[in-house]
Image (cartoon, rainbow, N blue to C red; front, top):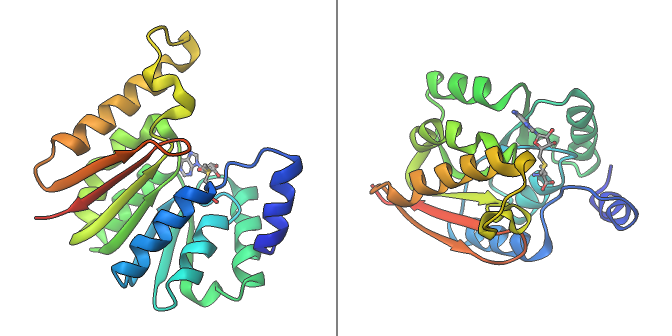
Length: 195
Ligand SMILES: C[S@@+](CC[C@H](N)C(=O)[O-])C[C@H]1O[C@@H](n2cnc3c(N)ncnc32)[C@H](O)[C@@H]1O
């Protein structure tokens, strides 16, 4: 799919693609850092992956998606946007894929975390080791539709909320990172690895 088709479709049907303000900030960070190696967790239809590559002409992307149908649509998006030469899509569960990337000695200067929110905390040790010093981690949806600040969280959301809190604490307590949370859209955590 072309990006404008995905955008068009998102007007009639909910699609979990990056929101405009968050997209703008991600692209600003990529351009300011002259980023070359991007890792994305949660490809979906390849929307944010394509947007990131279009804003950073010298960058390559590794993107992880466990759902086969989403991965297939995403590959078509990268083909349609003529970005396929700069993309490696790994169709696998993120935890498994991240462990392999660490073993392969891969390094990234930007990581966009946008997969299953309740799993973020399990990814943190891998992300920390995959990120170069000076690189940036951006995690989307850390406000989780406002549930993070509710006193009475519905049972069905409680585990995700607790796991997201665990993730946020891991990042913000880690002395290797300088982090902040922007309360825009669904909440964006930005953490720069400083040592
Ligand atoms: C919010 S969407 C990603 C949106 C995309 N980054 C964008 O902005 O265009 C999250 C994606 O993560 C995928 N996902 C969920 N759990 C996953 C897991 N454990 N491993 C890999 N991908 C996963 C979902 O199938 C979904 O496509």
